[in-house]
Length: 436
Ligand code: UGA
Image 1: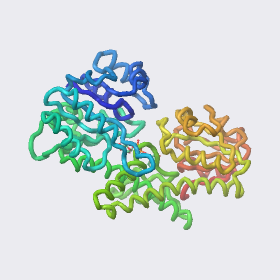
Image 2 (image 1 turned 90 degrees about the vertical axis):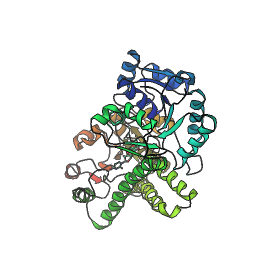
Image 3 (image 1 turned 30 degrees about the vertical axis):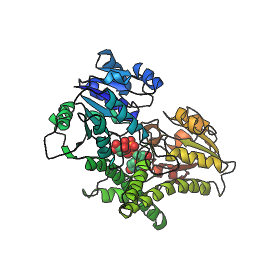
Image 4 (image 1 turned 120 degrees about the vertical axis):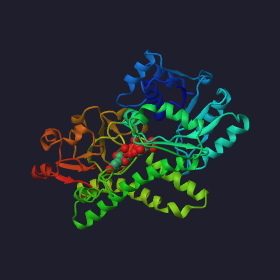
């Protein structure tokens, strides 16, 4: 298949490289010339395991190219629109300016009969509106929606081996060119038995926001249980293990901690609520506001826990922060609970020394006032409190003996419940986890 991918950010760069690795001919388009240059040199503008190798290999064998000139997409049968839909400044609604511009640009160059496939996460109703707008100037083109469920840090694997394929088309009951072309694109996944659902356009849009809302709900649910555990003396990890054995509940996404962040879950639940309000169905999603509140409360409670550990004030206290990425295997600090906690500690008078295996540069750009280092030892040097805020593998296995030569005080805040609590407690440390 010959295809273009419009928008070479996280989603687009991964999609373009992964599709080319399946043997398709792909041109990746972006209006940002720096991003295109970086991708051409095989450098992804973000940390994603496996992506740089794919970028280089696909470009060397000629299956992948990048361009800022949309005319490079003129021969493509399919165009995947992968641009961002960030939260609008000062509002909860999604900003659709990039999506609208991408559809308009592609519609002006696409060849006769091409299919425009949206992958961006959009408010329900967007695809039908775009179909009408595209049809006004180019009735020969078709708009379809094919939401993406990739996780940062596993993005290539999730794209090549998705757990389901969802095609949103105008009439799911009739055979369509869009579904036929998408089947050809994903032939290897379909052969491997990946479930494939053909639905109408609003369903496809809702599938994506519903999935992220459900994941956010699971995390906030377990964090609410952590609050109950804290006031009752129960242990949230054991609670999650026990309820997780029930297949209807499942153990995944039930890890209590400092909550969810990143470029998707927080903004998606807010945009979803805002859209419900616009459609007159606000009541249906008022619970998502509570999910958001529970999540944001994790951050202030973590800061409060460390203030208590320090004896009531953070002024003059040194905190060594391990991890600022919103999750491991990522350098993304967008709405990262870890980085937000580090900043709040500093605002309350603590000296905050921060490290992360991949996210130091992005963190520094966001909050330059914190003290950054590339070394774990330097981050915890003379620390009164060590705070593990992102569960990178190297932090999970930390023992009291690893930290003792460097720290000043034997206090550890385990924001992801990953340390060996018994080992710290029996070595004379004050251990504080979340809900245990
Ligand atoms: C999320 C979804 O998981 C993907 O399916 C979706 O495609 C993507 O958003 C998107 O919309 O593009 P991602 O943002 O990469 O993926 O991150 P997750 O792995 O979902 O983690 C989100 C946050 O939840 C992280 O901050 C993580 O630390 C936190 N989390 C996760 C918990 O606090 N507890 C858990 O048990 C699991």
